[in-house]
Image (cartoon, rainbow, N blue to C red; front, side, top):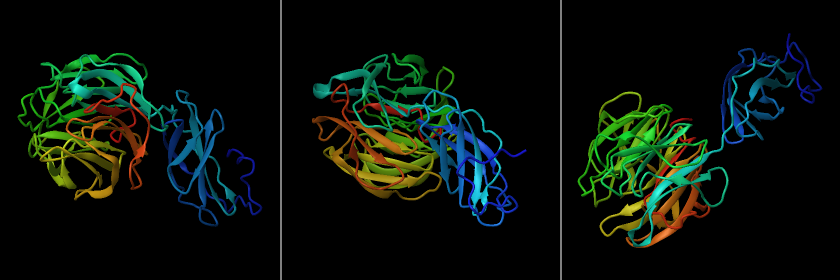
Length: 404
């Protein structure tokens, strides 16, 4: 028997013979104090077109509406569990409710930055974090196993992984944190090759390290992978088209990276299919050749921010974006304010926070800016790093484009 529609949702023209059939419930996915509720629209829309879809939470009776799937329900409490039902509305009134969704738990959108280098070349072991959906300064999470720079970050919804942190002979170490706690990083295993400056990206289950450079500046093209929920050493995946310092992002299925040979800037973009193994394929070119850009993505759009233009290690302010599922050259997004390089990115479905940077070869700055991924425009100030200057950190998040 259909449930009674919510109070206030029956129009003056309500006619149960002309209102729509119920939507078919899909999957509810937790966001930051919110949930995204997917559904399939009914084939029988009734006597007029459907004007809106709505979802309501249990508990709390929080309601969200949208013109199509999914519906976002806001105002939820992070860490609590919710189920949802959906209904459709047309001129003649609301449909019956759908079946109840799966249980989903909202979580804070954590961006976590690890390591970095301050003035006078002092490497840091600090791990610090922010809530990507807010503004403000970072807070201390814990420490890496050792101080270092130019690590690669990747993550699932529960774990953050860092590899290739350059500060000692142990540059091949992989280490991890658990997002739900704070504390120091734990040993995960070893990468096959001891490279720094690698690209890190992931699906919800698999992490990939690509490219990089040796301690002495030799370029690496190797790609290797790990299973994020386990521990252990890296496994060979394939090779990039060419080697060099790399930066990357991902959708749930595809990893994209740019790379440049040590001491140069190139505009090459390459991609791999994360669930398989094999060599990378050419994707297109960035708008400006540069090295060490920050990067981040949601599930559809990836962004490369700023970087170093060679020779002379001149900071660039260029921000580019690509559509991950396609191929082709990048499109101008806007400018980083100010021009910087040696930065890292951490992303949510809506934002990328960039942190840790230099604006000349020797001038380290306390930098933390953000952009809105779905738009275009210049970066906006987010806050400050709790540790002060920290160029060349590694960044990751629990809601990055690879797990959305």
